[in-house]
Length: 472
Image 1: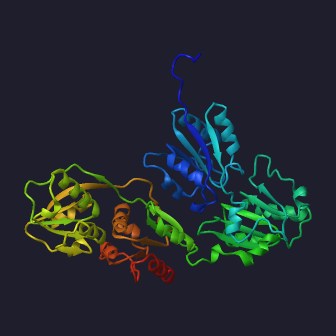
Image 2: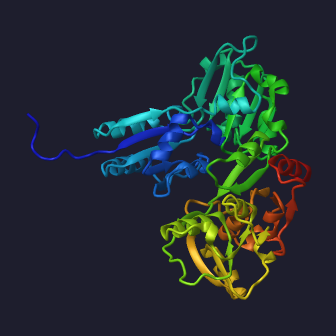
């Protein structure tokens, strides 16, 4: 017999591995869990671009740990997960690499399961394998290394809990995670227990991202090389003859845009972003406008000249026109469009445009003119003293990258991307960054603002990327 009363509904916790850094190394299941999440609890080494996958109402909670600084204790992280799950939330605990490879994922899983909360783990690519691959170092090779061992070099209360004698007897690849501050100790101890001082060593900093740096040496020289090149955390250390294969297999660091961090608009299709990633760049995105329709009424007396600033304003106009049971072909007014996309939408209805404009400054003012557009158009319409009807609002949601110091360039594939850029950042923030634009219509939006505008030769992604590679 069922118990009386209503059972308390409990949410679900997904422990998701974010991979080593490249946003495309997230698993398909990990991506789905992020898109479904009500809450995401994430760490320092997670690529923040992954957070753009979540829905606009998702709560983001940062619990990252810095070296020697843990502002949110491990026990508190578990408490947060349990508390949110008991509120019937779908929670993603997002951790860099694989959550069960020195990520304390097992501790968090045990804690939530002890409370009777549904739990799953979504494995991720560990930097011990994926990070080395991007540095051109296979962790195994049939003729070089037939085994590998992954060791944490994180110093606990009793020092490094490593059996050096056992490691010294191994012939496979050794990978140390969280160990750059212990590099000197690692090299000295391995030599002490019999490792050849000439054994090759590589240190890979920010593996799989465009700011990746790889330093190569041997057990005698690597510490000095790393100090000279000022390599810090996060870095992984690999010891073994597989390091020598980097001379042949180092592909990622030779790509044309490797080392470049490029700011792009956040879109669902990401075609430009993927092209840039394929050329070796890292991508940072800023929020694109979300269009939300407004309540408006068709004027009782229509103007002689109607101007539509974007495709959405035309769609809204057509919808209202149909509600009146009217035929658009019988509209007694001259119609103009601003922007290629807008004009193509209007012409699809068999309408001949009075003015087919690239951008709004080309509009020839008429005494009896009515402009349909978004909240963004209000100011310039007021300047030309035309009647304005707002058909939709533009809303910006989601995180944006506030620190632009690391940004090498900005890419704008269309005029809306230019408007969105100006809505997210001030001219002062953008002043020192070259802005690569696709097409005259896009360039027109930011011309005369004192910014560094570089126009692609043709209005294609290929031309835009070629221009980037030529100029950067």
